Image 1 (tube, rainbow, N blue to C red):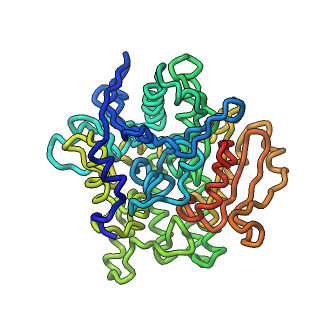
Image 2: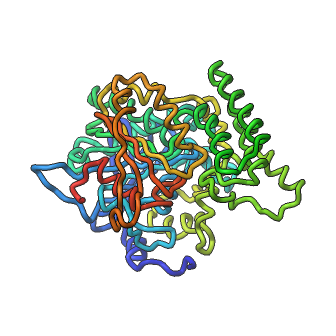
Image 3: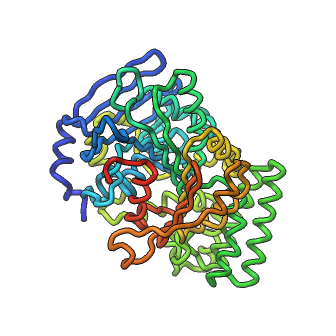
Length: 480
């Protein structure tokens, strides 16, 4: 389907979207929205010359039950790092429209209001010398890369500043809606640091929100444990032989030693080498679904070209967003959609800001944090009593289930033993037991773990039915 075919409602919104301004003592926001109030979007200046873009959807299934669970809001944090939540999470995974701009039957909007953001830790395509840089539609002025978030903590501060602006004193609708942070991939690291920053801001009276929980989907919480799981997993599913297993395990152990010595930049370089070895030994396996080959790699490349691809730093760094974009078959690709139809609808994107896929700048900005674990932060959230959910797609390699279960065992939380010993229960979806098991759940107190079968790294894309059922259970949505 080409770009010329799109929903009539979207065309109407492109021409009738309203614009309004929000102001506060700490930040200013320019915003727009649809006439019926079902969508709002805008910019918040989270730091001088740093502008973060947000997009909020109000659910048509919203239930206002004063005597029961209030209607929730989900803040979705994309991975990468540096991929656009406004683009990928919204149109490819859980938003109301898919990449063909058609209604998504499995949209998470049926269970909650949805808030997407483009974090200030990526880079956009350069159009001219003064083009801003950022992620998605977010940007910093003057092309100054020093203004990008350089640590997970800085990214969390930006997000908390944005939330404080959106949950301003006169926004009673958001204030009355419990907030859940749901993240994918590297977004999980942002989720736990943001949750801690948000709780502090709430306690200090700077954020008028009610944080109800965090969900970490196929998250890069412990890079060490993830990479240690790669070799054994691929050996068991016949994608590596003994030689490949030895080579991958040797580099994984090197990463473990480097992380222990706090040599995080060196560990990232070794991680790049390990990915290259895996691609070579497993014949370009798909890191996001180990039953497939990497669709971005041309099997007909000459050996010299293949070796250059294996050695390409940028290829590894952009694999996440490249994988998502490869799923779009519309004319002009996903960048074309975002820079035409969506840009026209929003009406407030600066002329010199162009939406594009993730680039190497994000890794350069976050290089010191990329291989750092965030297990202690998960522990802190659990000990504070916050509901923490972890979910994992069965077929993921990059954040394989085995690695995730291994870092969970490193938690110091006093409920860990009871969680580990608790019974795992099967979950079903459409068709019930006759359709087969779709997932498993284990829980104890404020920790839940979901095994999602038939899914790789992007659970909402690969197996949307149990993902939506899981969401309803996590957030206790009134719309069941």
